[in-house]
Amino acid sequence: MRAVILSIALLACGAARAEDMPIFDAHLHYSHDAWERVPPKAFIDILKKAGIRRAMVSSSNNEGTRMLQDEAPDVIVPELRPYRSRGELGTWARDPTVIPFLEDLLAKRKYVAIGEFHIYGADADLPNMRRIVELAKQHRLFLHSHSDSAAVERHFQQDPTARVLWAHSGFERPESVRAMLRKYPGLWCDLAFLTSHATNGKVNAGWREAFLEFPDRFLVGTDSFTPERLHYIAEHARWSREWLADLPREVAEKIGYRNGERLFGGPPR
Image (cartoon, rainbow, N blue to C red; front, side):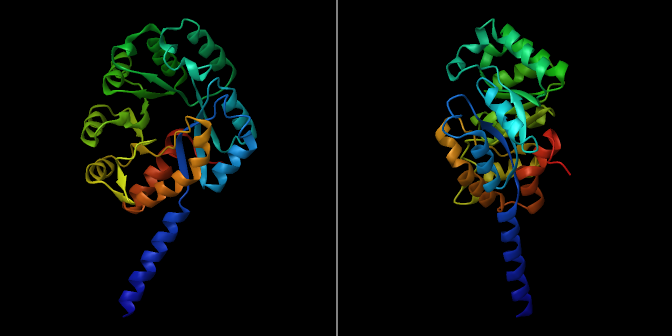
């Protein structure tokens, strides 16, 4: 009886720890169409209420990221995005004004990554993308790439020492993601807006194998790609803790927050 009671207590303790686990959200946006609906202070309040200790944020036109960082520098991890407005998603790679825009901002502020940007296949060989790979190397930044595997391959062909955070894990199957991780030690994967890895709080088999093989190479993320998604952040954090609790504790903590803090910096001590 005592053993049963102890087992129940340990399970309850584990569940409580899972519920309290901090989150490093590696994929958030705060673009120009979100500022009036959710002011910077309200955005930070959303993160804190959700238990998100650090958040990697990009924005079109990068002013949103600056405002958030000024509001809460201990919480916001800034990315530099090559978009000045939402409408540039499909045009930036061929726009000759993008590179001077990025170079100007890199001279003014510190960032941890360039992205999230969208690039696919052979377009990753376009001059703009090649220059971004060079800038990332020069400034020791990650490339946060919303791409297919063909584009990610090209990032590493251009710079074998590149560090790439693959947005949404490329929406690939887990076995394909594992193959890419084996091939490229400088590749990490965010799980933003990817629902195939867990069902009803249980990690699906293929993704479990990926997480157990590469516990140091995955990060969670929400992807607030529209203003409405900002109000989903807390729900997504709860859902993330739910399926993370189905993994060994050490693996869950790495994916939930330790990997992000190791790569991009933790909260001030």
